[in-house]
Length: 241
Ligand SMILES: [Zn+2]
Image 1 (cartoon, protein in one colour):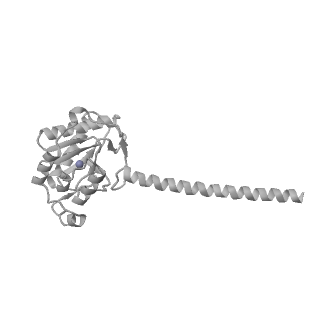
Image 2: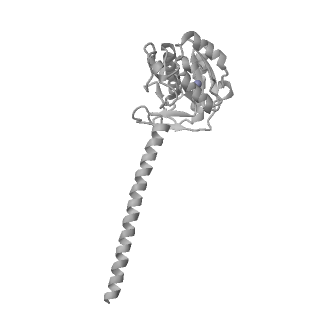
Image 3: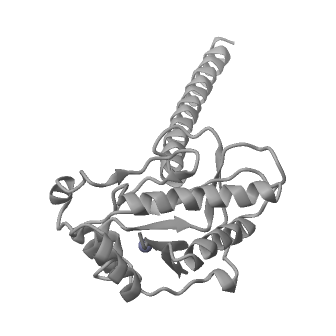
């Protein structure tokens, strides 16, 4: 009997040890998942503050052909050189040139993504254009009875160093870019910010077309040059004022 109970005791100790180990694995696993989820959300949700709503995205969404504007780099660059700042080689050099620029941050008109290869600064004219695009986009949604959404800015002012890094990893990024003049920014057409759940639902593709229609009106009015970027999933926009 004594032998049997000793065996049983040993078995129980082993079982408890295993249970404890699994509990530790579960806790560590949950902590890791939470950490990775948090980092992914920070990157993908494009935060520069707390997000109260949500991000809707569809990587396959495209805008209709009539909104796939083709204002090429030489056209955009000419406007940028006329209206923008002198490009800076490095971030340190750029910091001395920010005085006459507007820092853009998420507001009721648009959201600003986390920017790795650029800084959230624009000329006064470009910042005004961005606000007008954001307002026009929301006005169109409101008129259609659709749920409120905001556009997301994914890139703005770059240094020559930023641009060189980008053109190495991305064939689309020209060596000389309008982004270096603070006149130019990118708005994604595959991701939008949704602050509330009120109103009629709308797909990301429909949102891309509402954004396209908003840009068409401003482009037709001579406010901007626009290039539809297929690989970067964005409208590349240079202000003409
Ligand atoms: Zn761009």
